[in-house]
Amino acid sequence: MEKVVRVIEPLYNPVAPSFIPTQRKRVAAYARVSTEQEEQANSYEAQIDYYTKHIKAKAEWDFAGIYTDEGISATSTKKRDGFNRMIADALAGKIDLILTKSVSRFARNTVDTLTTVRRLKDKGIEVYFEKENIFTMDSKGELLITIMSSLAQEESRSISENVTWGKRKSFQDGKLIMPYKSFLGYTKGLDDKPIIVPEEAAIVRRIYRLFMEGKTVNTIARILTKERIPTPRNKSRWYGSTVKSILTNEKYKGDALLQKTYGVNFLTKERKPNMGELPK
Image (cartoon, rainbow, N blue to C red; front, side, top):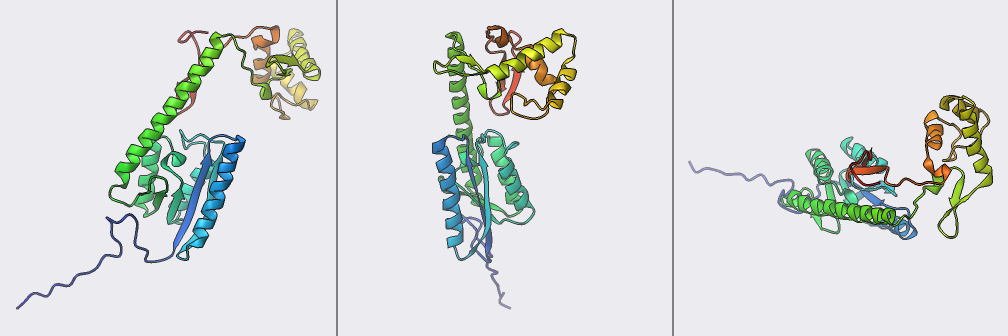
């Protein structure tokens, strides 16, 4: 007897850039900018507006939301709440497709990028990187993502090294860098030099006086909290560590010791006390 061969056609083509739609897709987008500067803020708003309109314009797509992180670096995904919430929702079955501007917007850490993409891919969730035109379900997608995320990671390394070089050059020139937003007693003057804020200076002098009278840092913190005196970061509660940082800060006696800490890893942002590894 002659054999009868029946071909069962696939529901999707795994070689094609994306799934051939067999049902409506729940589509979300991810937008991120790494600083809060005005031009970046405009880009952030533009990304949200673009993806909202783009997704809603597709008849075969259901809008699953826009997930965002503003003023957050992409070197690590740990502190990106919007990103982590999006991944959790996707893995929970709420999203079928994620759109994002580029690999560098998604993550600049190669390990994070590949790990996340593989987790999503295992659940049948696709990511589309618009700038690079990469679909993660594409057979060549992972290779391209590896290359692009490696380039993005090296770009982050280069930026970090340039920033570090600039700061160290300023240190060598004796230029003072002060975190005025969290520095009690001083504000930035017109000549870029610190000027005293009288009402804050009174608090600093009181902290020193209480310590010289025998009060512990924790006792001083309780006194300041009880009297509702705002902390250097304008919080209501004082901690002993905050009081100690003021008591041990050499800038209150007119000196400045620069590069007291240094960055160990540009990806993890880990910092360590400078115990002689680098010049001070």
